[in-house]
Image 1: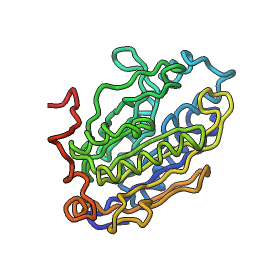
Image 2: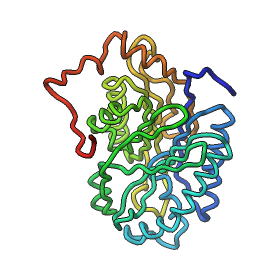
Image 3: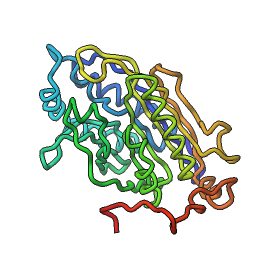
Image 4: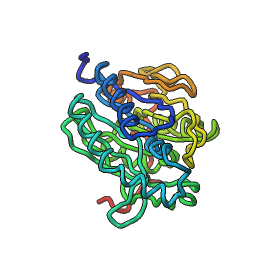
Length: 296
């Protein structure tokens, strides 16, 4: 399927946690959704945060956080290999949810691997681990957030809790990102709505698009994905050129499914110049600004 150059087609996978006795069962499900998204002409497909935790469900007993992190680390090379292969095979850009992995410095991070159509792989760390992630997994936050240049423009990745900090999205916007992906994993409706409301706020503040992808369902034998609640969505600014409610598409609550939307990037450029409100233009840098420590 082909579409106009200014239109970017995005897909979001609302994935259900399932008992996964063998790694290939998990990777087979990922491959299925990548193939379908590509066959429907998508430029991007996004998976949920912590979607690889279900790889631990086939263990004989529930692993301690330390042992779980070590076991997940064994899957890191396989995950990267599969994402690269699928991106090249299906000519689609994959936002690979998130995965707990050791950094070169020996610290645990919550990482999103992004595989582009040409097979290149990028990693983006969650900057703001939740209190639970710190206490249970000893996950540390990353130190930098930069856009990823793709064949359809610069994109930003904010992993779940990151979306609740407006400074990060503003920094990425100022660096050129207009399309954001937010893999998330929340256990309750309260948590889900925190992500949803904040992502919607980011679309207004930055006149951008935000794609959220959440985990649903439950799986036994894995700590920290005991229960999941999500209603994944593709969100737009709230103005005349966009969806009436600022929702281009959304999933049925707590049901595994794949959603799509066509996003007009030219409409963003126009809204930033002639929109009913012009949030980026009307900022008051003489009064306030975001200063990113590791940026020039």
